[in-house]
Length: 147
Image (cartoon, rainbow, N blue to C red; front, side, top):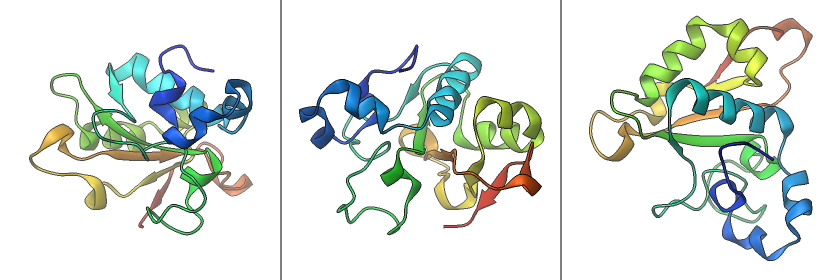
């Protein structure tokens, strides 16, 4: 569970037909800790809602994303920032320049902002973060993924 987000904000609507405790168990605790910490630091965040349904936990049979997407394992979220002046690029740059703090939040990987950032439009794109284990050589480091 999180202090800032409800289950419908975090999962594909398909999962809302299941017992709530089972769905929460599908979400990685590090990923949940990360989104709460980012919400505390940068203000309101949109994951699912406003037309978005697959920015959190996705069904395994979805056509969205990669075959082995961390979204399908409950370890990834695509974040849209709602506070004035907070953009995906700004948060990406903060994460990269504060790897020890970001790692402590539960973040292990971010998608390269060149693939997800937009200069205009709603939310200026999104920031993909995930909590996939990156191994002992990457403790206190953030891995940048190029999708």
